[in-house]
Length: 210
Length: 162
Length: 172
Image (tube, rainbow over all chains, first blue to last red; front, side, top):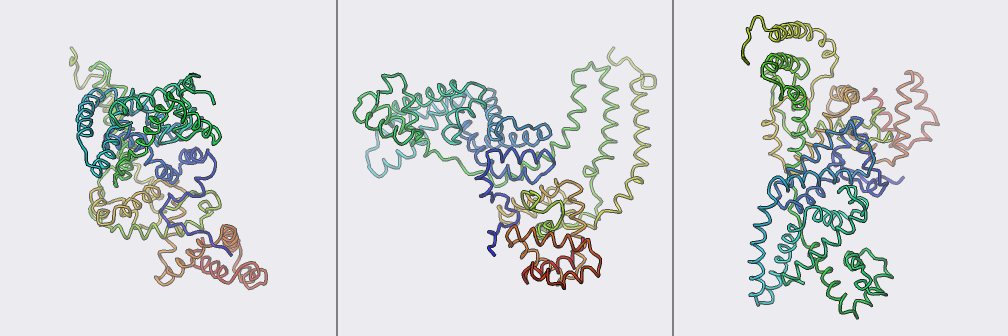
């Protein structure tokens, strides 16, 4: 007899087989949450927690805020379980909630302040890059400068372009999914993304990185 | 291959940097880009953007994220009852709101006592401390026993252990 | 003008007092109605006692463990507390039977259930089905069945041991 691989109890993340299954698996889990199965909520949380937090972090660029917003995302998911209907992929719905909360936060709270602070940093970083001449340190600097520069460049994008880039790049979401999240057409998403990447390219070129 | 920039389809260069093009299209585009003064810097720029985005790590998730979330969910389940009760009275004139709020408050207190005994502080004698290890052992045993429940068996589609 | 009312005569406060009296009367009778259900509850276990601890006490205990282990315990507790009530009730009744066993028998059951976990899915289904079948039989039927050739042919020796011990010690 061939034994099944042992799955430690309490570890609900071992979904290696399930993850590879249907695209509707998450929606199916959410329907079970709707039916009162708390275990399935834990499974969904385990699967999507990190990607939601990372997405929100890159969108709002403050870790504490990202985690607070992520808490609100999952709280809303749980709260709306009784009325949940799988009209879209679960991930699309999840990121729609996340994007909505993040864009509200950005607009209401700290958008302008972040821009001013990061724009100031950009000049300092550009000067540092030009003046440094040592190869090994330069390589290190270029690595960290590139991360800081890309952070600033993304932060400088209009919010919807920012969200579209992050979903496209890090979540590998399709245009149609991003369109549903942002409430626009597929062609509008393509246009949005192209403008965003062009802006990033131009901004990094201006900083001397490209 | 036609020049994407001349053809007014520069988004192809973004798709190229993102690795979204089919292998054959990629090869054709690379051949074109190598010889096109307009496309070369644009393609290089987008590749640099993509690499920079790759290098942008996010900080790790706080270890107590789940704990805080579950606590919020539990609190939300209790607060939402109160919120639903209070919300209609917020915009009322005071002479109407006062007696109604008093009634609602009395009902709320009664409701909490009747239906939410968890809100009432437990008797001191019952609050013996339990070690987390004991809880874990009990959870382990429950997991094992759950396999033989008619409604709980894995064969019925149960998604995970406790 | 906003406060131009009398405590005794304002209809809203009369209503409040009436409602309070009605609710108090209802509250008086409630505990008696609930007692029979409470008496049917399985005996206390570590999780129920844990749930009665204050959040601060619980966090203090969990802080003694490595963060990942504490996180998993929290998650498993949440899932337990959010099981369907009838499922939890059935599980706790089974647990009560188990916890009343002497420690050495508990260890036997644990060992058999761990072995059961390791079986391939089809064999788990077969073994589980067999235990369910035994629960439906009379004592005499069970003995005859388990001594019969069909039982010995259908199940390997380790599987037979799982079936016998699980049925013997967890009959429901």
